[in-house]
Length: 616
Image (tube, rainbow, N blue to C red; front, side, top):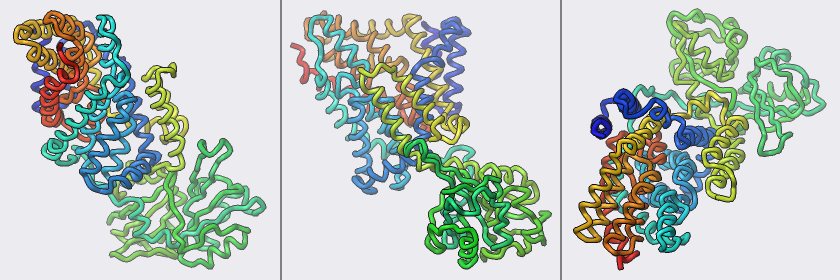
């Protein structure tokens, strides 16, 4: 027991100092418990197979898909219509909506639903997301106290009271307690979040972003010279490739892309494919060709010769998307082999699979008849092609050129907006499976099914994109700390702490005993899951109350509230761990904001619970 408590204390010190990565501290603590024989290797690794950890991994994927499809942005726009850009209104709306959802859905599922929406909303309103995400996690726990099914500890104390002969608690027996938690917690979090969550930090090693895709489109006036041409069924162009047509040489047109929509499997499973001009894909009826030129007569000639239909003429601002095809800027270096050569001679399209859409030279833009332009040192070329080809140019540049920005990162930010309805349907099905007991699917199963569906349905680009959504530091931290509860139980440390403190306070009256039970439970929940803590403390609280001859209801409620209102640690609950990477929080942030809230909530509950559930 001594070794376990010592390892726990040292871990807490290192977490507080923040000089060593939190996941590394957790792993070292875990290894120490194994080396000293407190835990077996199987017990130490049990956290990595824990359903909660697997659920967290799946929720990272689901949240990533909600971002990737633009669903979060759509939802955040709706919320912003209600709250505007006022930070205090946004804060209150996040707290109230999250608490309401958390009344019926697990706090983990609630955060999974709300997190991407809140991040997108904060970005749109120009509010630091860090001021909203930690309150989001806390509100999900507070909302869980509103109903019987809101959190597992509520069900445990209800069962304990029923077996003790005090009757089963009703669905809304917890509502008065939950309302106090939400009201008091919201009021206290307003100043705490402003004082200690001043704004998001810049991640270590984070590179400065280049221009956004929309900025490049505006800067080079691409939309102004863009025309969309639809391919009808009887067009002689059907079955031919863009390369075979030699559109650039014959008409002076640059083909930006060929877009193809497949709706054969229904609107929800619609797929949009983009092909660059050099892709070699044969054109089919229904395809839309995007061509670029400053001279509309060239487009008209091309359309007339092949019987194409003009969907949106030049200067109309035809909408551009960058699902599979992207754009980026490259700067030619002084030693580049392309200097003093024309674009036609460089054969960018043939060799590298990209088009050159424009050239920026000394703050002047060359946008038309580029094939005969000779390249100079320092020229900035706007290139267009598949994201893979653009990324390959970045790797091959060397002393020839430099790609500005991070095309691979930019590609990851592109939203597959046509997949938003499907992502929303998968998300709602997941939440429903977690919320309703009559659906015979375990929560972890529902999350994993949703994560896999997000990948196979195309809501995420590929499996690699799914893996990139994971925050491995949070997953390892949580998985490594879960076995700590096994060590505390196995060595008798948890029973010793709870039993000795409660027995020592019983002589001072029911209020002092209630406070002792509440804060012992609160401390234990920092290191043990709230469900395990409630299982351990519920019988102790019941016997202590009966020993004093008072009604045990308030004491059991104290156990449930204390085990659910754990805010001072990022690994005490899954919601805290989920928001940690998105808010760029440290362990100290949770202590600065969560500890005062946790202590103050305890003081309020010690006086409020006897009023709601009298001792007599």
